[in-house]
Picture 1 (tube, rainbow, N blue to C red):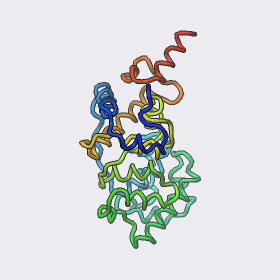
Picture 2 (cartoon, helix red, strand yellow):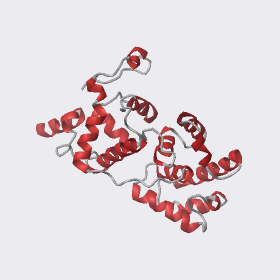
Picture 3 (spheres, one colour):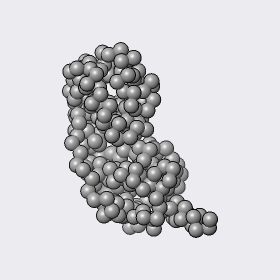
Picture 4 (cartoon, one colour):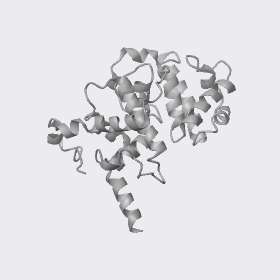
Amino acid sequence: MAELFTQPEDLAALRRPLTPEQADKLPHLHRLLLGYYGTPPERKPWDPLTQLIYSLLSGRTKTPASHQVMRELERAFPGAGPGHWEPVRDAPVAELERAIQIVTFPEQKAPRLKALLEQISVRTGALSLDFLHRYRTEKIRDWLEQFEGVGAQVSAAVVNFSTLRRRALCVDANHLRVIQRLCVVPRADAATTEERLMRLVPETWDAEMLDQHHSLVKIHAQTLCSFEQPKCEPCPLLKLCPTGERNLAELKLR
């Protein structure tokens, strides 16, 4: 399958209008996944700060454990919860680490979370990110990415999944794996991959549609397109996937 874009410095390619095949690339994937998995559960958006905390803690952690750790924070620090994260900010790092033990790398995430909440309080005068609603998406993401541990994946999650509800595509490890196996765009890191994918996103896709697309890709990654043993034969995207076709060809040769 031909790559849709060459190197980032190929500016001429970036200026060219999309071909009909390119323009239908993501919609086609979306239709196939939607037909196979059905409509994902509708998200109930959190406020931006709550989403930021969740996204910071959930990296390389399964979704059920990520939701559980949010409940653990509320249990361990009375009064904590959406709109009121001061008890978490003011807690000792050791207590934070104990409260988030079920996520990956709690020893790194606990001090990072505390520092993040403290810095937001100092910079804004309050522990809230509701003021971000006033700013354009690019400015919000640049501001968020100043903090340690907040990269493109986390900032995209905050602006798209939270009540900010802006156009962005959260390319987490699951999303990146599927896109790379499908060869939709050249292999790159999550930030570059999001930038390239957003060039393929139809203008008619709003924030909620981008959220649904990400959810479908993530479900697919966790259901069939797993890291170690992808189930290629029943995959609804098999005919579009060079990696899947190669995997099945190798199985037939054994």
